[in-house]
Length: 303
Ligand code: NAI
Image 1: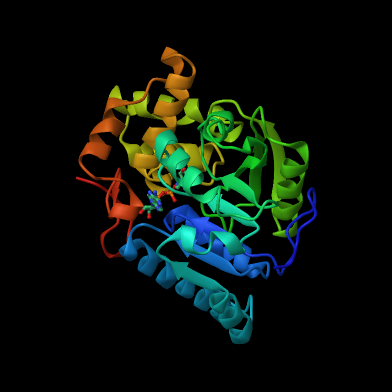
Image 2 (image 1 turned 180 degrees about the vertical axis):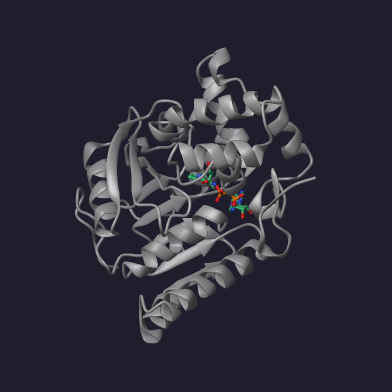
């Protein structure tokens, strides 16, 4: 296997393991494969793996139709992405793991504990967590210095920003290698220390929370509020359509995590409206319904 120098970015021959083939994992896999890496994409759910490969193929076909790449390039990228059921089965071959599974500290810790003894000594363990402490994710591991946040935004193929987040134990050369890798992948990398929600998700909390309060008070419906924020405020998306895109399970988990990390500061208190959507399985675009109904590809206010 091709070696990687300690602080160096990943080179094209280096393999990447993406764990979690949901909205984020599949996009991250496509970004890495487009940068010439062999990518293993893993998920506990066979259905998620299948849907991810279909979505990746559709996105590549769209790129060919729009003239962004040739059919040969698209097919080469697709061939570099291999779906695997067990991430442990390929761990010894990879230089970088990017975890994009459920936003739950214990589940992420269990995953990294199972991979750490199997990956090569120089491999980096990155997490796409939106809000959880990198220090806490890394703490139970034998070598917490190689754990770092590599936080992409939704959708990873289009959003330029990547937050590179260091916990207390993260080695500076590990953060540097991830920063340089993100730049090589065409991203804008911002270095951050591990604080709850890091930069973007911390700053964005009041955006969602205040919109949910205005809705709860009945000032206007979500479509009107979204339109005002978009058209008068100049934002690309309103708060309700953005929460639908992110997924209410993910957005609610992030708010809950920031709230508890700040010792239940009322400013970050999660919304009962969003809690109800999560309980009802109305997770947004990914389940076909959230604040809006996405039946037949359209976006209409849900009844
Ligand atoms: P998602 O719900 O679309 O996908 C998560 C996937 O992980 C599912 O397919 C699930 O089957 C799989 N999974 C769960 N536990 C697993 C395990 N133990 N091993 C392997 N696979 C497992 O979630 P999404 O939106 O892709 O989020 C994933 C992570 O990325 C979360 O930590 C989230 O906070 C973060 N994130 C989400 C963003 C968003 O806008 N949705 C933006 C940036 C980060």
